[in-house]
Image (cartoon, rainbow, N blue to C red; front, side, top):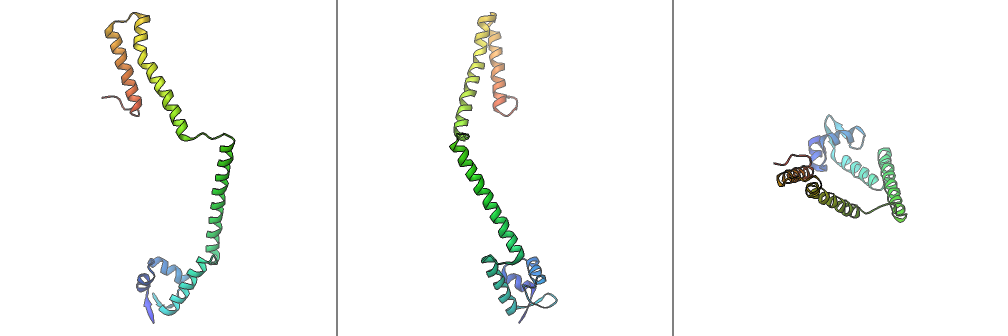
Length: 152
């Protein structure tokens, strides 16, 4: 029984382009222009799918399998290098790094906020001068904390 390409699209659940590709590769059996022998095409297509699933899908499938094996080997090698680096103490957990940076930045913030009072003692600043200095330091800290956007 002959069927159209559109009918094979619905039967196999693949695109018209895939039908054309399978037809040009001889996997689907053509019986005319945009017509295919349904029985022979189903047999050939299922055989093709079985070969791909078993790893014998021809040159393209072999290349895909080789590429997938290469990716797996690269991932496994990377995993092994990370384990070795961790064992040597060359890696630091991200959360430990984050905690340390938070502590450092908290100390920097506290030191900057102490500048107005320290400057007042050393430079004999007025209360207004200290207040202006404090506002400016806080504005800069806010700007830094908002990715460079000026405080509003």
